[in-house]
Image 1 (cartoon, rainbow, N blue to C red):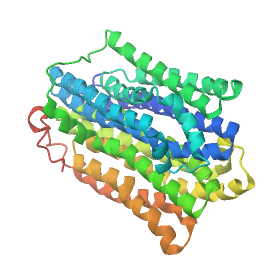
Image 2 (spheres, rainbow, N blue to C red):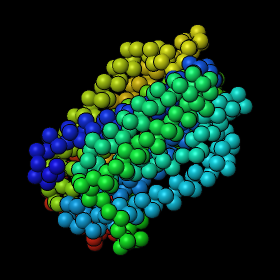
Image 3 (cartoon, rainbow, N blue to C red):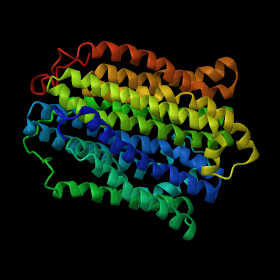
Image 4 (cartoon, helix red, strand yellow):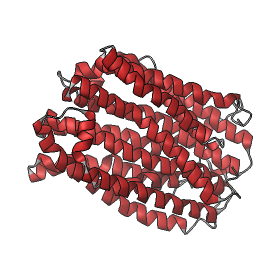
Length: 454
Protein backbone atom coordinates (compact mmCIF):
# COMPACT_ATOMS: atom_id res chain seq x y z
CA UNK A 1 0.00 0.00 0.00
CA UNK A 2 1.15 3.51 -0.83
CA UNK A 3 1.14 5.35 2.51
CA UNK A 4 2.22 8.63 0.92
CA UNK A 5 -0.20 8.90 -1.99
CA UNK A 6 -2.88 6.21 -1.66
CA UNK A 7 -6.50 6.52 -0.49
CA UNK A 8 -5.86 7.31 3.17
CA UNK A 9 -9.31 6.33 4.45
CA UNK A 10 -9.16 2.95 2.71
CA UNK A 11 -5.62 2.26 3.90
CA UNK A 12 -6.39 3.19 7.51
CA UNK A 13 -9.52 1.10 7.82
CA UNK A 14 -7.85 -1.87 6.12
CA UNK A 15 -5.09 -1.63 8.70
CA UNK A 16 -7.62 -1.11 11.49
CA UNK A 17 -9.51 -4.27 10.53
CA UNK A 18 -6.29 -6.27 10.49
CA UNK A 19 -4.98 -4.74 13.74
CA UNK A 20 -8.31 -5.22 15.48
CA UNK A 21 -8.40 -8.86 14.43
CA UNK A 22 -4.88 -9.38 15.72
CA UNK A 23 -5.45 -7.72 19.11
CA UNK A 24 -8.89 -9.29 19.48
CA UNK A 25 -7.63 -12.80 18.98
CA UNK A 26 -4.55 -12.22 21.14
CA UNK A 27 -6.92 -11.57 24.05
CA UNK A 28 -8.27 -15.08 23.59
CA UNK A 29 -5.21 -16.39 25.43
CA UNK A 30 -6.02 -14.67 28.71
CA UNK A 31 -9.81 -14.76 28.40
CA UNK A 32 -10.13 -18.44 27.50
CA UNK A 33 -7.52 -19.45 30.06
CA UNK A 34 -9.32 -17.63 32.87
CA UNK A 35 -12.74 -18.87 31.77
CA UNK A 36 -11.66 -22.51 31.51
CA UNK A 37 -9.59 -22.54 34.68
CA UNK A 38 -12.24 -20.62 36.64
CA UNK A 39 -14.96 -23.07 35.65
CA UNK A 40 -12.74 -26.10 36.35
CA UNK A 41 -11.14 -25.02 39.64
CA UNK A 42 -13.45 -22.28 40.97
CA UNK A 43 -13.22 -18.59 41.96
CA UNK A 44 -9.86 -19.03 43.73
CA UNK A 45 -8.29 -20.03 40.42
CA UNK A 46 -9.86 -16.98 38.76
CA UNK A 47 -8.32 -14.80 41.47
CA UNK A 48 -4.95 -16.57 40.98
CA UNK A 49 -4.92 -15.78 37.27
CA UNK A 50 -5.70 -12.16 38.16
CA UNK A 51 -2.49 -12.25 40.20
CA UNK A 52 -0.68 -13.66 37.14
CA UNK A 53 -1.91 -10.94 34.77
CA UNK A 54 1.00 -8.54 35.56
CA UNK A 55 3.34 -11.16 34.08
CA UNK A 56 1.48 -10.85 30.76
CA UNK A 57 1.66 -7.07 31.00
CA UNK A 58 5.45 -7.19 31.33
CA UNK A 59 5.95 -9.77 28.57
CA UNK A 60 3.92 -7.85 26.00
CA UNK A 61 5.31 -4.51 27.20
CA UNK A 62 8.85 -5.57 26.31
CA UNK A 63 7.71 -6.42 22.79
CA UNK A 64 6.04 -3.01 22.49
CA UNK A 65 9.10 -1.19 23.86
CA UNK A 66 11.37 -2.43 21.08
CA UNK A 67 8.69 -3.29 18.51
CA UNK A 68 6.77 0.00 18.41
CA UNK A 69 9.90 2.01 19.22
CA UNK A 70 11.82 0.45 16.35
CA UNK A 71 8.84 0.37 13.98
CA UNK A 72 8.12 4.10 14.38
CA UNK A 73 11.71 4.96 13.46
CA UNK A 74 11.64 2.31 10.71
CA UNK A 75 8.57 4.01 9.22
CA UNK A 76 10.16 7.45 9.44
CA UNK A 77 13.25 6.15 7.64
CA UNK A 78 11.07 4.61 4.92
CA UNK A 79 9.37 8.00 4.52
CA UNK A 80 12.86 9.48 3.99
CA UNK A 81 13.61 6.73 1.40
CA UNK A 82 16.44 5.30 3.55
CA UNK A 83 15.79 1.55 3.59
CA UNK A 84 19.25 0.65 4.89
CA UNK A 85 18.70 2.84 7.94
CA UNK A 86 15.23 1.33 8.35
CA UNK A 87 16.61 -2.21 8.45
CA UNK A 88 19.24 -1.07 10.91
CA UNK A 89 16.39 -0.14 13.27
CA UNK A 90 14.84 -3.58 12.71
CA UNK A 91 18.09 -5.40 13.49
CA UNK A 92 18.83 -3.41 16.61
CA UNK A 93 15.24 -3.83 17.86
CA UNK A 94 15.58 -7.60 17.53
CA UNK A 95 18.85 -7.64 19.49
CA UNK A 96 17.45 -5.43 22.25
CA UNK A 97 14.36 -7.62 22.56
CA UNK A 98 16.44 -10.77 22.95
CA UNK A 99 18.54 -9.22 25.70
CA UNK A 100 15.69 -7.73 27.75
CA UNK A 101 13.34 -10.72 27.61
CA UNK A 102 16.16 -13.10 28.57
CA UNK A 103 16.63 -11.23 31.86
CA UNK A 104 12.92 -11.35 32.68
CA UNK A 105 12.73 -15.03 31.63
CA UNK A 106 15.50 -15.97 34.07
CA UNK A 107 13.79 -14.02 36.86
CA UNK A 108 10.53 -15.94 36.33
CA UNK A 109 12.34 -19.28 36.29
CA UNK A 110 14.39 -18.62 39.44
CA UNK A 111 12.04 -16.48 41.54
CA UNK A 112 8.50 -17.38 40.48
CA UNK A 113 7.16 -17.77 44.04
CA UNK A 114 8.31 -14.40 45.41
CA UNK A 115 7.28 -12.62 42.20
CA UNK A 116 3.76 -14.07 42.25
CA UNK A 117 3.39 -13.18 45.94
CA UNK A 118 4.48 -9.64 45.10
CA UNK A 119 1.73 -9.60 42.46
CA UNK A 120 -0.91 -10.42 45.09
CA UNK A 121 -1.02 -14.21 45.44
CA UNK A 122 -1.45 -15.56 48.99
CA UNK A 123 -1.00 -19.13 50.26
CA UNK A 124 -4.37 -20.19 48.83
CA UNK A 125 -3.85 -18.67 45.38
CA UNK A 126 -0.14 -19.32 44.82
CA UNK A 127 -0.46 -23.05 43.89
CA UNK A 128 -2.93 -22.25 41.09
CA UNK A 129 -0.72 -19.48 39.70
CA UNK A 130 2.40 -21.68 39.80
CA UNK A 131 0.64 -24.56 38.05
CA UNK A 132 -0.40 -22.20 35.26
CA UNK A 133 3.12 -20.74 35.02
CA UNK A 134 5.03 -24.04 34.90
CA UNK A 135 4.62 -24.85 31.17
CA UNK A 136 4.91 -21.17 30.27
CA UNK A 137 8.40 -21.07 31.78
CA UNK A 138 9.68 -22.95 28.75
CA UNK A 139 8.47 -20.42 26.16
CA UNK A 140 7.94 -16.95 27.67
CA UNK A 141 10.18 -15.25 25.04
CA UNK A 142 7.89 -16.44 22.23
CA UNK A 143 5.15 -14.03 23.30
CA UNK A 144 7.52 -11.06 23.23
CA UNK A 145 8.96 -11.92 19.82
CA UNK A 146 5.42 -12.32 18.48
CA UNK A 147 4.70 -8.76 19.57
CA UNK A 148 7.95 -7.44 18.09
CA UNK A 149 7.54 -9.15 14.71
CA UNK A 150 3.89 -8.10 14.41
CA UNK A 151 4.89 -4.44 14.73
CA UNK A 152 7.50 -4.63 11.97
CA UNK A 153 5.48 -6.84 9.63
CA UNK A 154 2.60 -4.33 9.74
CA UNK A 155 5.10 -1.63 8.74
CA UNK A 156 6.32 -3.88 5.93
CA UNK A 157 2.90 -3.71 4.19
CA UNK A 158 1.60 -7.05 5.54
CA UNK A 159 -1.12 -5.95 8.02
CA UNK A 160 -3.13 -9.15 7.67
CA UNK A 161 -0.34 -11.64 8.42
CA UNK A 162 -0.16 -10.85 12.17
CA UNK A 163 -3.93 -11.38 12.30
CA UNK A 164 -3.65 -14.75 10.58
CA UNK A 165 -0.78 -15.70 12.89
CA UNK A 166 -2.64 -14.84 16.09
CA UNK A 167 -5.80 -16.46 14.71
CA UNK A 168 -3.96 -19.74 14.15
CA UNK A 169 -2.53 -19.72 17.68
CA UNK A 170 -5.80 -18.50 19.21
CA UNK A 171 -7.94 -21.21 17.61
CA UNK A 172 -5.56 -23.85 18.90
CA UNK A 173 -5.66 -22.25 22.34
CA UNK A 174 -9.47 -22.47 22.51
CA UNK A 175 -9.62 -26.16 21.72
CA UNK A 176 -6.34 -26.88 23.50
CA UNK A 177 -7.67 -25.33 26.71
CA UNK A 178 -10.71 -27.59 26.66
CA UNK A 179 -8.60 -30.66 25.88
CA UNK A 180 -5.83 -30.11 28.43
CA UNK A 181 -7.95 -28.57 31.20
CA UNK A 182 -11.04 -30.80 31.06
CA UNK A 183 -10.32 -33.87 28.93
CA UNK A 184 -6.93 -34.53 30.53
CA UNK A 185 -7.94 -33.05 33.92
CA UNK A 186 -4.81 -30.88 34.10
CA UNK A 187 -6.61 -27.76 35.32
CA UNK A 188 -4.51 -24.60 35.43
CA UNK A 189 -1.43 -26.39 34.11
CA UNK A 190 -3.39 -27.55 31.08
CA UNK A 191 -4.30 -23.95 30.25
CA UNK A 192 -0.63 -23.03 30.43
CA UNK A 193 0.28 -25.86 28.05
CA UNK A 194 -2.35 -24.82 25.48
CA UNK A 195 -1.26 -21.19 25.63
CA UNK A 196 2.40 -22.14 25.17
CA UNK A 197 1.71 -24.22 22.07
CA UNK A 198 -0.53 -21.50 20.66
CA UNK A 199 2.31 -18.96 20.97
CA UNK A 200 4.62 -21.31 19.08
CA UNK A 201 2.10 -21.63 16.24
CA UNK A 202 1.74 -17.86 16.03
CA UNK A 203 5.52 -17.41 15.79
CA UNK A 204 5.81 -19.95 12.96
CA UNK A 205 3.18 -18.13 10.91
CA UNK A 206 4.90 -14.77 11.48
CA UNK A 207 8.25 -16.20 10.41
CA UNK A 208 6.72 -17.16 7.06
CA UNK A 209 6.91 -13.47 6.14
CA UNK A 210 10.69 -13.75 5.79
CA UNK A 211 10.25 -16.36 3.03
CA UNK A 212 7.80 -14.17 1.11
CA UNK A 213 8.70 -12.14 -1.98
CA UNK A 214 6.94 -9.17 -0.33
CA UNK A 215 9.42 -9.13 2.54
CA UNK A 216 11.79 -6.15 2.67
CA UNK A 217 12.93 -6.66 6.28
CA UNK A 218 16.59 -7.58 6.44
CA UNK A 219 19.11 -8.04 9.23
CA UNK A 220 21.69 -5.33 8.74
CA UNK A 221 25.19 -5.73 10.20
CA UNK A 222 25.76 -2.01 9.84
CA UNK A 223 23.20 -1.03 12.46
CA UNK A 224 24.22 1.75 14.82
CA UNK A 225 24.28 0.91 18.53
CA UNK A 226 23.84 4.61 19.33
CA UNK A 227 20.27 4.30 18.01
CA UNK A 228 19.39 2.24 21.11
CA UNK A 229 18.35 5.35 23.02
CA UNK A 230 16.15 6.48 20.14
CA UNK A 231 14.33 3.13 19.96
CA UNK A 232 13.84 2.84 23.71
CA UNK A 233 12.73 6.45 24.19
CA UNK A 234 10.29 6.24 21.26
CA UNK A 235 8.80 2.95 22.41
CA UNK A 236 8.84 3.71 26.12
CA UNK A 237 5.31 5.05 26.34
CA UNK A 238 3.83 1.90 24.74
CA UNK A 239 6.01 -0.17 27.05
CA UNK A 240 4.92 1.83 30.06
CA UNK A 241 1.21 1.46 29.24
CA UNK A 242 1.47 -2.29 29.79
CA UNK A 243 4.04 -2.23 32.59
CA UNK A 244 2.08 0.42 34.45
CA UNK A 245 -1.07 -1.66 34.04
CA UNK A 246 0.83 -4.53 35.64
CA UNK A 247 1.98 -2.32 38.51
CA UNK A 248 -1.51 -0.94 38.99
CA UNK A 249 -2.95 -4.46 38.97
CA UNK A 250 -0.54 -5.39 41.75
CA UNK A 251 -1.64 -2.35 43.78
CA UNK A 252 -5.31 -3.13 43.16
CA UNK A 253 -4.85 -6.80 44.05
CA UNK A 254 -3.30 -5.90 47.39
CA UNK A 255 -5.80 -3.14 48.20
CA UNK A 256 -8.76 -5.33 47.28
CA UNK A 257 -7.47 -8.14 49.48
CA UNK A 258 -6.96 -5.60 52.29
CA UNK A 259 -10.39 -3.94 52.12
CA UNK A 260 -12.75 -6.30 50.27
CA UNK A 261 -11.42 -9.90 50.26
CA UNK A 262 -11.00 -12.78 47.80
CA UNK A 263 -14.52 -12.62 46.33
CA UNK A 264 -13.92 -9.04 45.26
CA UNK A 265 -10.54 -10.07 43.84
CA UNK A 266 -12.29 -12.72 41.74
CA UNK A 267 -14.60 -9.98 40.41
CA UNK A 268 -11.54 -7.85 39.69
CA UNK A 269 -10.15 -10.77 37.69
CA UNK A 270 -13.17 -10.46 35.40
CA UNK A 271 -12.82 -6.66 35.25
CA UNK A 272 -9.16 -7.00 34.28
CA UNK A 273 -10.14 -9.15 31.31
CA UNK A 274 -12.71 -6.56 30.22
CA UNK A 275 -10.30 -3.68 30.78
CA UNK A 276 -7.54 -5.44 28.86
CA UNK A 277 -9.94 -6.23 26.04
CA UNK A 278 -10.92 -2.55 25.70
CA UNK A 279 -7.30 -1.48 25.96
CA UNK A 280 -6.40 -3.85 23.13
CA UNK A 281 -9.14 -2.33 20.98
CA UNK A 282 -7.45 1.00 21.63
CA UNK A 283 -4.11 -0.61 20.70
CA UNK A 284 -5.61 -1.64 17.36
CA UNK A 285 -6.67 1.97 16.68
CA UNK A 286 -3.15 3.21 17.40
CA UNK A 287 -1.30 0.35 15.70
CA UNK A 288 -3.36 0.79 12.53
CA UNK A 289 -2.42 4.47 12.39
CA UNK A 290 1.24 4.13 13.40
CA UNK A 291 2.76 3.01 10.05
CA UNK A 292 0.74 5.62 8.14
CA UNK A 293 1.54 8.41 10.60
CA UNK A 294 5.26 7.56 10.82
CA UNK A 295 5.85 7.41 7.07
CA UNK A 296 3.86 10.58 6.30
CA UNK A 297 5.45 12.48 9.16
CA UNK A 298 8.88 11.42 7.94
CA UNK A 299 7.96 12.67 4.46
CA UNK A 300 6.65 15.97 5.85
CA UNK A 301 3.03 15.40 4.79
CA UNK A 302 1.26 17.01 7.76
CA UNK A 303 -2.18 17.14 6.11
CA UNK A 304 -2.26 13.36 5.72
CA UNK A 305 -1.14 12.96 9.34
CA UNK A 306 -4.11 15.08 10.46
CA UNK A 307 -6.57 13.08 8.37
CA UNK A 308 -5.27 9.81 9.77
CA UNK A 309 -5.58 11.26 13.28
CA UNK A 310 -9.23 12.11 12.58
CA UNK A 311 -10.00 8.53 11.51
CA UNK A 312 -8.29 7.25 14.65
CA UNK A 313 -10.39 9.48 16.91
CA UNK A 314 -13.62 8.24 15.30
CA UNK A 315 -12.52 4.61 15.76
CA UNK A 316 -11.51 5.17 19.40
CA UNK A 317 -14.87 6.79 20.15
CA UNK A 318 -16.71 3.86 18.60
CA UNK A 319 -14.87 1.26 20.68
CA UNK A 320 -15.15 3.32 23.86
CA UNK A 321 -18.91 3.82 23.55
CA UNK A 322 -19.51 0.20 22.53
CA UNK A 323 -17.70 -1.34 25.50
CA UNK A 324 -19.06 1.16 28.01
CA UNK A 325 -22.66 0.43 27.02
CA UNK A 326 -22.13 -3.34 26.79
CA UNK A 327 -20.40 -3.64 30.17
CA UNK A 328 -22.96 -1.52 31.99
CA UNK A 329 -25.94 -3.32 30.48
CA UNK A 330 -24.88 -6.93 31.20
CA UNK A 331 -22.28 -7.12 34.00
CA UNK A 332 -23.31 -10.50 35.45
CA UNK A 333 -23.10 -12.12 32.01
CA UNK A 334 -19.36 -11.41 31.95
CA UNK A 335 -18.97 -12.88 35.44
CA UNK A 336 -20.70 -16.10 34.43
CA UNK A 337 -18.38 -16.45 31.45
CA UNK A 338 -15.37 -16.76 33.74
CA UNK A 339 -16.71 -18.74 36.70
CA UNK A 340 -19.67 -20.29 38.51
CA UNK A 341 -20.30 -17.30 40.78
CA UNK A 342 -21.31 -17.49 44.42
CA UNK A 343 -24.11 -15.32 45.81
CA UNK A 344 -21.54 -12.96 47.32
CA UNK A 345 -19.79 -12.49 43.96
CA UNK A 346 -23.12 -11.77 42.26
CA UNK A 347 -23.80 -9.17 44.95
CA UNK A 348 -20.47 -7.41 44.41
CA UNK A 349 -20.08 -7.68 40.64
CA UNK A 350 -22.80 -5.45 39.07
CA UNK A 351 -21.92 -2.18 40.80
CA UNK A 352 -18.15 -2.84 40.62
CA UNK A 353 -18.21 -3.56 36.88
CA UNK A 354 -20.52 -0.66 36.05
CA UNK A 355 -18.42 1.87 37.96
CA UNK A 356 -15.18 0.60 36.43
CA UNK A 357 -16.68 0.46 32.92
CA UNK A 358 -17.34 4.19 32.95
CA UNK A 359 -13.59 4.57 32.29
CA UNK A 360 -13.74 2.79 28.93
CA UNK A 361 -14.72 5.79 26.79
CA UNK A 362 -11.74 7.90 27.83
CA UNK A 363 -9.45 4.85 27.92
CA UNK A 364 -9.78 4.28 24.16
CA UNK A 365 -8.92 7.89 23.35
CA UNK A 366 -6.05 8.08 25.85
CA UNK A 367 -4.29 4.86 24.81
CA UNK A 368 -4.60 5.47 21.07
CA UNK A 369 -3.24 9.00 21.54
CA UNK A 370 0.11 7.59 22.71
CA UNK A 371 0.62 6.04 19.26
CA UNK A 372 -0.14 9.38 17.61
CA UNK A 373 2.37 11.21 19.82
CA UNK A 374 5.00 8.49 19.23
CA UNK A 375 4.53 8.57 15.47
CA UNK A 376 5.14 12.32 15.26
CA UNK A 377 8.01 11.92 17.76
CA UNK A 378 6.42 13.87 20.58
CA UNK A 379 8.04 11.58 23.13
CA UNK A 380 7.33 13.81 26.11
CA UNK A 381 3.58 13.90 25.41
CA UNK A 382 3.43 10.16 24.84
CA UNK A 383 5.38 9.54 28.03
CA UNK A 384 3.24 11.87 30.15
CA UNK A 385 -0.02 10.28 28.98
CA UNK A 386 1.36 6.85 29.87
CA UNK A 387 2.59 7.99 33.28
CA UNK A 388 -0.55 9.95 34.20
CA UNK A 389 -3.00 7.14 33.47
CA UNK A 390 -0.56 4.33 34.13
CA UNK A 391 0.72 4.96 37.63
CA UNK A 392 0.74 8.60 38.79
CA UNK A 393 -2.97 9.42 39.14
CA UNK A 394 -4.34 5.90 39.68
CA UNK A 395 -1.48 4.93 41.98
CA UNK A 396 -2.31 7.86 44.26
CA UNK A 397 -6.08 7.32 44.11
CA UNK A 398 -5.99 3.60 44.86
CA UNK A 399 -4.55 4.41 48.29
CA UNK A 400 -6.16 7.81 48.87
CA UNK A 401 -9.84 7.09 48.11
CA UNK A 402 -10.44 4.18 50.52
CA UNK A 403 -8.28 5.78 53.23
CA UNK A 404 -9.82 9.27 53.10
CA UNK A 405 -13.44 8.16 52.75
CA UNK A 406 -13.14 4.92 54.78
CA UNK A 407 -14.79 2.94 52.00
CA UNK A 408 -13.15 0.07 50.15
CA UNK A 409 -15.89 0.24 47.50
CA UNK A 410 -14.36 3.47 46.18
CA UNK A 411 -11.49 1.39 44.80
CA UNK A 412 -13.69 0.71 41.77
CA UNK A 413 -13.82 4.45 40.97
CA UNK A 414 -10.05 4.82 40.63
CA UNK A 415 -9.77 4.22 36.88
CA UNK A 416 -12.79 6.31 35.79
CA UNK A 417 -11.30 9.32 37.60
CA UNK A 418 -7.84 8.57 36.23
CA UNK A 419 -8.90 8.28 32.59
CA UNK A 420 -11.09 11.42 32.77
CA UNK A 421 -8.27 13.53 34.22
CA UNK A 422 -5.74 12.18 31.71
CA UNK A 423 -8.06 13.00 28.82
CA UNK A 424 -7.93 16.69 29.70
CA UNK A 425 -4.19 16.66 28.95
CA UNK A 426 -4.65 14.53 25.81
CA UNK A 427 -7.32 16.85 24.39
CA UNK A 428 -5.18 19.96 24.84
CA UNK A 429 -1.97 18.44 23.44
CA UNK A 430 -3.61 16.82 20.39
CA UNK A 431 -5.04 20.19 19.37
CA UNK A 432 -1.75 22.00 19.95
CA UNK A 433 0.47 19.48 18.12
CA UNK A 434 -1.88 19.14 15.15
CA UNK A 435 -1.53 22.87 14.50
CA UNK A 436 2.23 22.49 13.94
CA UNK A 437 2.15 19.56 11.51
CA UNK A 438 2.19 21.58 8.29
CA UNK A 439 5.67 22.96 8.96
CA UNK A 440 7.34 20.16 10.90
CA UNK A 441 9.58 17.60 9.27
CA UNK A 442 11.65 15.10 11.18
CA UNK A 443 15.17 14.16 10.14
CA UNK A 444 15.81 10.57 11.26
CA UNK A 445 19.52 10.66 10.54
CA UNK A 446 20.40 13.89 12.33
CA UNK A 447 17.89 14.31 15.15
CA UNK A 448 17.37 10.81 16.53
CA UNK A 449 19.30 11.27 19.73
CA UNK A 450 18.93 15.03 20.07
CA UNK A 451 15.15 15.38 19.78
CA UNK A 452 13.63 16.57 23.04
CA UNK A 453 10.21 15.20 22.09
CA UNK A 454 8.52 18.46 23.13
